[in-house]
Image (cartoon, rainbow, N blue to C red):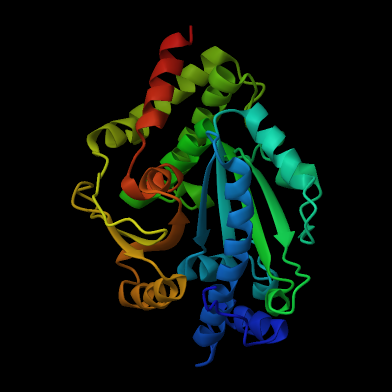
Length: 344
Protein backbone atom coordinates (compact mmCIF):
# COMPACT_ATOMS: atom_id res chain seq x y z
CA UNK A 1 0.00 0.00 0.00
CA UNK A 2 1.27 3.47 -0.92
CA UNK A 3 2.30 5.71 1.95
CA UNK A 4 -0.54 8.21 1.60
CA UNK A 5 -0.41 11.60 3.29
CA UNK A 6 -2.90 12.06 6.11
CA UNK A 7 -4.19 15.27 7.76
CA UNK A 8 -1.75 16.74 10.27
CA UNK A 9 -3.90 19.69 11.24
CA UNK A 10 -7.34 19.89 12.79
CA UNK A 11 -10.31 20.92 10.69
CA UNK A 12 -10.50 24.09 12.79
CA UNK A 13 -6.90 24.97 11.91
CA UNK A 14 -7.60 24.26 8.22
CA UNK A 15 -10.71 26.44 8.23
CA UNK A 16 -8.90 29.33 9.90
CA UNK A 17 -6.10 29.12 7.33
CA UNK A 18 -8.71 29.17 4.56
CA UNK A 19 -10.34 32.27 6.03
CA UNK A 20 -6.97 34.04 6.00
CA UNK A 21 -6.39 33.04 2.36
CA UNK A 22 -9.78 34.51 1.50
CA UNK A 23 -8.69 37.85 2.97
CA UNK A 24 -5.14 37.72 1.57
CA UNK A 25 -3.89 37.72 5.16
CA UNK A 26 -2.11 34.36 5.23
CA UNK A 27 0.36 33.43 7.96
CA UNK A 28 3.70 31.72 7.15
CA UNK A 29 2.32 28.30 8.12
CA UNK A 30 -0.87 28.57 6.02
CA UNK A 31 0.62 27.24 2.75
CA UNK A 32 1.81 24.14 4.63
CA UNK A 33 -1.65 23.65 6.13
CA UNK A 34 -3.28 23.97 2.72
CA UNK A 35 -0.85 21.62 0.99
CA UNK A 36 -1.17 18.95 3.66
CA UNK A 37 -4.97 19.20 3.60
CA UNK A 38 -5.09 18.94 -0.17
CA UNK A 39 -2.56 16.07 -0.37
CA UNK A 40 -4.52 14.14 2.26
CA UNK A 41 -7.42 13.84 -0.18
CA UNK A 42 -5.36 11.52 -2.41
CA UNK A 43 -6.33 8.60 -0.16
CA UNK A 44 -10.02 9.38 -0.59
CA UNK A 45 -9.61 9.71 -4.36
CA UNK A 46 -7.88 6.34 -4.50
CA UNK A 47 -10.64 4.67 -2.50
CA UNK A 48 -13.43 5.96 -4.72
CA UNK A 49 -11.66 5.53 -8.05
CA UNK A 50 -11.08 1.84 -7.30
CA UNK A 51 -14.82 1.40 -6.73
CA UNK A 52 -15.83 3.41 -9.81
CA UNK A 53 -13.35 1.66 -12.10
CA UNK A 54 -14.56 -1.73 -10.90
CA UNK A 55 -18.15 -0.77 -11.70
CA UNK A 56 -17.21 0.60 -15.13
CA UNK A 57 -15.04 -2.35 -16.19
CA UNK A 58 -15.86 -3.69 -19.69
CA UNK A 59 -18.15 -0.74 -20.45
CA UNK A 60 -17.90 2.51 -22.42
CA UNK A 61 -17.77 4.49 -19.18
CA UNK A 62 -14.59 6.53 -18.62
CA UNK A 63 -13.28 7.40 -15.14
CA UNK A 64 -10.70 10.05 -14.26
CA UNK A 65 -9.63 11.78 -11.04
CA UNK A 66 -7.92 14.99 -10.02
CA UNK A 67 -6.82 17.05 -7.03
CA UNK A 68 -8.11 20.61 -7.13
CA UNK A 69 -5.44 23.15 -8.07
CA UNK A 70 -4.09 25.36 -5.28
CA UNK A 71 -4.86 28.56 -7.19
CA UNK A 72 -8.43 27.36 -7.82
CA UNK A 73 -8.93 26.58 -4.13
CA UNK A 74 -7.75 30.05 -3.13
CA UNK A 75 -9.80 31.69 -5.88
CA UNK A 76 -12.91 29.85 -4.67
CA UNK A 77 -12.31 30.95 -1.08
CA UNK A 78 -12.00 34.56 -2.25
CA UNK A 79 -15.13 34.35 -4.43
CA UNK A 80 -17.14 32.80 -1.58
CA UNK A 81 -15.82 34.34 1.68
CA UNK A 82 -18.25 32.31 3.81
CA UNK A 83 -16.92 29.00 2.49
CA UNK A 84 -14.90 26.91 4.93
CA UNK A 85 -11.76 25.27 3.56
CA UNK A 86 -12.28 22.38 5.97
CA UNK A 87 -15.66 21.64 4.36
CA UNK A 88 -14.82 22.39 0.70
CA UNK A 89 -16.36 19.41 -1.05
CA UNK A 90 -14.45 19.28 -4.34
CA UNK A 91 -10.77 19.29 -3.39
CA UNK A 92 -10.88 15.61 -4.34
CA UNK A 93 -12.72 14.87 -7.57
CA UNK A 94 -13.73 11.91 -9.69
CA UNK A 95 -15.14 12.47 -13.17
CA UNK A 96 -17.25 9.74 -14.79
CA UNK A 97 -18.22 10.12 -18.45
CA UNK A 98 -21.02 8.20 -20.21
CA UNK A 99 -22.25 7.70 -23.78
CA UNK A 100 -25.78 8.88 -22.90
CA UNK A 101 -28.03 10.07 -20.09
CA UNK A 102 -29.78 6.73 -19.53
CA UNK A 103 -26.45 4.98 -18.95
CA UNK A 104 -25.41 7.77 -16.61
CA UNK A 105 -28.59 7.52 -14.54
CA UNK A 106 -28.41 3.71 -14.29
CA UNK A 107 -24.75 3.79 -13.20
CA UNK A 108 -25.38 6.52 -10.63
CA UNK A 109 -28.35 4.64 -9.16
CA UNK A 110 -26.15 1.58 -8.85
CA UNK A 111 -23.57 3.62 -6.92
CA UNK A 112 -26.32 4.94 -4.65
CA UNK A 113 -27.30 1.37 -3.80
CA UNK A 114 -23.74 0.44 -2.88
CA UNK A 115 -23.25 -0.97 0.61
CA UNK A 116 -20.28 1.11 1.66
CA UNK A 117 -19.95 3.22 4.77
CA UNK A 118 -19.39 6.53 2.98
CA UNK A 119 -22.22 9.05 3.40
CA UNK A 120 -23.74 10.86 0.43
CA UNK A 121 -24.17 14.51 1.36
CA UNK A 122 -25.65 15.77 -1.93
CA UNK A 123 -29.23 14.64 -1.32
CA UNK A 124 -31.16 17.56 -2.85
CA UNK A 125 -31.53 16.83 -6.58
CA UNK A 126 -32.54 20.42 -7.28
CA UNK A 127 -29.19 21.61 -5.97
CA UNK A 128 -26.87 18.95 -7.42
CA UNK A 129 -28.59 17.59 -10.55
CA UNK A 130 -27.66 20.06 -13.28
CA UNK A 131 -29.22 17.91 -15.98
CA UNK A 132 -32.69 18.33 -14.50
CA UNK A 133 -31.82 21.84 -13.34
CA UNK A 134 -29.13 23.31 -15.65
CA UNK A 135 -27.04 26.20 -14.40
CA UNK A 136 -27.76 29.65 -15.89
CA UNK A 137 -24.44 29.49 -17.77
CA UNK A 138 -25.46 26.24 -19.51
CA UNK A 139 -23.50 23.75 -17.40
CA UNK A 140 -25.14 20.32 -17.30
CA UNK A 141 -24.11 17.24 -15.37
CA UNK A 142 -24.73 15.72 -11.94
CA UNK A 143 -22.55 16.09 -8.86
CA UNK A 144 -22.59 13.78 -5.86
CA UNK A 145 -20.65 14.61 -2.71
CA UNK A 146 -19.56 11.87 -0.32
CA UNK A 147 -18.06 12.00 3.14
CA UNK A 148 -15.39 9.38 3.62
CA UNK A 149 -16.01 6.79 6.31
CA UNK A 150 -13.98 3.71 7.21
CA UNK A 151 -14.40 0.66 9.38
CA UNK A 152 -10.62 0.17 9.62
CA UNK A 153 -8.14 1.82 11.98
CA UNK A 154 -5.96 2.91 9.06
CA UNK A 155 -8.84 4.48 7.15
CA UNK A 156 -9.98 6.41 10.22
CA UNK A 157 -7.11 8.86 9.62
CA UNK A 158 -9.09 10.28 6.67
CA UNK A 159 -12.56 10.08 8.23
CA UNK A 160 -14.77 13.02 7.31
CA UNK A 161 -12.89 14.17 4.20
CA UNK A 162 -15.15 14.98 1.25
CA UNK A 163 -15.04 14.05 -2.42
CA UNK A 164 -17.13 15.16 -5.38
CA UNK A 165 -18.12 12.75 -8.16
CA UNK A 166 -19.05 14.47 -11.44
CA UNK A 167 -21.28 12.53 -13.82
CA UNK A 168 -21.44 13.79 -17.42
CA UNK A 169 -22.39 12.48 -20.84
CA UNK A 170 -19.81 12.77 -23.61
CA UNK A 171 -21.89 15.60 -25.08
CA UNK A 172 -21.99 17.50 -21.80
CA UNK A 173 -18.28 16.85 -21.36
CA UNK A 174 -17.50 18.25 -24.82
CA UNK A 175 -19.33 21.46 -23.88
CA UNK A 176 -17.56 21.76 -20.50
CA UNK A 177 -14.23 21.07 -22.19
CA UNK A 178 -14.84 23.84 -24.72
CA UNK A 179 -15.58 26.31 -21.92
CA UNK A 180 -12.28 25.48 -20.23
CA UNK A 181 -10.31 25.61 -23.47
CA UNK A 182 -11.76 29.05 -24.18
CA UNK A 183 -10.45 30.12 -20.78
CA UNK A 184 -7.01 28.69 -21.54
CA UNK A 185 -6.71 30.22 -25.01
CA UNK A 186 -8.25 33.65 -24.42
CA UNK A 187 -8.28 36.29 -21.72
CA UNK A 188 -11.85 35.37 -20.79
CA UNK A 189 -12.89 32.76 -18.23
CA UNK A 190 -16.54 31.88 -18.90
CA UNK A 191 -16.34 28.87 -16.54
CA UNK A 192 -16.59 31.09 -13.47
CA UNK A 193 -18.65 33.83 -15.10
CA UNK A 194 -15.56 36.04 -15.13
CA UNK A 195 -15.31 36.43 -18.90
CA UNK A 196 -16.88 38.99 -21.19
CA UNK A 197 -20.70 38.64 -21.31
CA UNK A 198 -20.68 37.65 -24.97
CA UNK A 199 -18.40 34.67 -24.17
CA UNK A 200 -20.67 33.53 -21.34
CA UNK A 201 -23.74 33.95 -23.56
CA UNK A 202 -22.13 32.01 -26.42
CA UNK A 203 -21.68 28.92 -24.28
CA UNK A 204 -25.10 29.22 -22.66
CA UNK A 205 -26.78 29.36 -26.08
CA UNK A 206 -24.58 26.50 -27.30
CA UNK A 207 -25.66 24.37 -24.34
CA UNK A 208 -29.31 24.89 -25.24
CA UNK A 209 -28.71 23.99 -28.89
CA UNK A 210 -26.81 20.80 -28.01
CA UNK A 211 -29.31 19.67 -25.37
CA UNK A 212 -32.22 19.95 -27.80
CA UNK A 213 -30.46 18.44 -30.79
CA UNK A 214 -28.78 15.44 -29.18
CA UNK A 215 -30.38 14.70 -25.79
CA UNK A 216 -34.04 15.61 -26.39
CA UNK A 217 -34.11 18.00 -23.45
CA UNK A 218 -33.49 21.67 -22.72
CA UNK A 219 -30.83 23.67 -20.92
CA UNK A 220 -30.91 27.27 -19.69
CA UNK A 221 -33.14 28.80 -22.42
CA UNK A 222 -36.12 26.43 -22.53
CA UNK A 223 -38.55 29.12 -23.76
CA UNK A 224 -36.46 30.37 -26.68
CA UNK A 225 -37.54 29.19 -30.13
CA UNK A 226 -35.19 27.28 -32.42
CA UNK A 227 -35.11 30.24 -34.78
CA UNK A 228 -34.21 32.65 -32.00
CA UNK A 229 -31.49 30.29 -30.78
CA UNK A 230 -29.94 30.03 -34.23
CA UNK A 231 -30.01 33.80 -34.78
CA UNK A 232 -28.53 34.51 -31.36
CA UNK A 233 -25.83 31.87 -31.81
CA UNK A 234 -24.77 33.26 -35.20
CA UNK A 235 -24.61 36.79 -33.79
CA UNK A 236 -22.47 35.66 -30.84
CA UNK A 237 -20.11 33.67 -33.06
CA UNK A 238 -19.71 36.71 -35.29
CA UNK A 239 -18.84 38.76 -32.20
CA UNK A 240 -16.56 36.26 -30.40
CA UNK A 241 -15.16 34.09 -33.23
CA UNK A 242 -14.92 31.21 -30.76
CA UNK A 243 -15.54 28.44 -33.27
CA UNK A 244 -13.02 29.99 -35.64
CA UNK A 245 -10.49 30.01 -32.80
CA UNK A 246 -11.17 26.36 -31.97
CA UNK A 247 -10.80 25.35 -35.62
CA UNK A 248 -7.38 27.03 -35.81
CA UNK A 249 -6.03 25.26 -32.74
CA UNK A 250 -4.63 21.85 -33.47
CA UNK A 251 -5.07 19.19 -30.80
CA UNK A 252 -1.75 18.56 -29.12
CA UNK A 253 -0.99 14.85 -29.52
CA UNK A 254 1.82 14.00 -27.15
CA UNK A 255 3.69 10.75 -26.72
CA UNK A 256 4.52 9.95 -23.11
CA UNK A 257 5.76 7.12 -20.99
CA UNK A 258 2.28 6.69 -19.53
CA UNK A 259 1.80 6.08 -15.83
CA UNK A 260 -1.42 6.36 -13.87
CA UNK A 261 -0.44 9.59 -12.05
CA UNK A 262 0.27 12.52 -14.36
CA UNK A 263 0.91 16.25 -14.01
CA UNK A 264 -0.49 18.21 -16.96
CA UNK A 265 1.05 21.62 -17.66
CA UNK A 266 -0.58 23.98 -20.14
CA UNK A 267 1.40 27.26 -20.39
CA UNK A 268 -0.72 30.41 -20.66
CA UNK A 269 -0.76 31.73 -24.23
CA UNK A 270 -0.19 35.27 -25.43
CA UNK A 271 -3.12 37.37 -26.57
CA UNK A 272 -1.91 37.49 -30.17
CA UNK A 273 -0.88 33.86 -30.69
CA UNK A 274 -3.02 31.01 -29.41
CA UNK A 275 -0.72 28.42 -31.02
CA UNK A 276 2.45 29.20 -29.07
CA UNK A 277 1.67 26.80 -26.24
CA UNK A 278 2.40 23.09 -25.93
CA UNK A 279 1.06 20.68 -23.35
CA UNK A 280 3.64 19.06 -21.09
CA UNK A 281 2.85 15.76 -19.35
CA UNK A 282 4.98 14.49 -16.45
CA UNK A 283 4.14 10.89 -15.45
CA UNK A 284 4.71 9.35 -12.00
CA UNK A 285 4.44 5.85 -10.61
CA UNK A 286 4.13 7.16 -7.04
CA UNK A 287 1.20 9.37 -6.06
CA UNK A 288 3.23 10.96 -3.23
CA UNK A 289 6.09 11.84 -5.58
CA UNK A 290 3.53 13.32 -7.96
CA UNK A 291 1.99 15.44 -5.20
CA UNK A 292 5.40 16.74 -4.06
CA UNK A 293 6.31 17.75 -7.62
CA UNK A 294 2.83 19.18 -8.16
CA UNK A 295 3.20 21.44 -5.13
CA UNK A 296 6.59 22.74 -6.24
CA UNK A 297 5.51 23.29 -9.87
CA UNK A 298 2.50 25.33 -8.80
CA UNK A 299 4.83 27.68 -6.93
CA UNK A 300 7.46 27.77 -9.68
CA UNK A 301 4.99 28.37 -12.53
CA UNK A 302 2.40 30.51 -10.75
CA UNK A 303 0.87 32.93 -13.23
CA UNK A 304 2.65 31.18 -16.12
CA UNK A 305 0.74 27.93 -16.63
CA UNK A 306 -2.35 25.93 -15.78
CA UNK A 307 -1.18 22.86 -13.84
CA UNK A 308 -3.23 19.90 -12.60
CA UNK A 309 -2.52 16.48 -11.10
CA UNK A 310 -4.72 13.77 -12.63
CA UNK A 311 -5.07 10.00 -12.66
CA UNK A 312 -6.39 7.71 -15.39
CA UNK A 313 -6.25 4.04 -16.40
CA UNK A 314 -4.61 4.66 -19.77
CA UNK A 315 -3.51 7.44 -22.07
CA UNK A 316 -6.70 7.47 -24.14
CA UNK A 317 -8.85 7.83 -21.02
CA UNK A 318 -6.54 10.63 -19.89
CA UNK A 319 -7.14 12.45 -23.18
CA UNK A 320 -10.90 11.94 -22.99
CA UNK A 321 -11.35 12.95 -19.37
CA UNK A 322 -8.99 15.93 -19.41
CA UNK A 323 -9.16 16.88 -23.08
CA UNK A 324 -9.22 20.59 -22.21
CA UNK A 325 -5.48 20.32 -21.50
CA UNK A 326 -4.98 18.90 -24.99
CA UNK A 327 -6.91 21.88 -26.44
CA UNK A 328 -9.28 19.31 -27.96
CA UNK A 329 -12.64 20.85 -28.88
CA UNK A 330 -13.17 18.72 -31.98
CA UNK A 331 -16.40 17.07 -30.83
CA UNK A 332 -17.88 20.35 -29.57
CA UNK A 333 -17.30 22.02 -32.95
CA UNK A 334 -18.62 19.01 -34.89
CA UNK A 335 -21.76 18.79 -32.74
CA UNK A 336 -22.53 22.48 -33.19
CA UNK A 337 -21.88 22.40 -36.94
CA UNK A 338 -24.29 19.48 -37.32
CA UNK A 339 -26.89 21.04 -35.05
CA UNK A 340 -26.78 24.37 -36.86
CA UNK A 341 -27.05 22.66 -40.25
CA UNK A 342 -30.10 20.72 -39.07
CA UNK A 343 -31.85 23.72 -37.50
CA UNK A 344 -34.38 25.32 -39.89
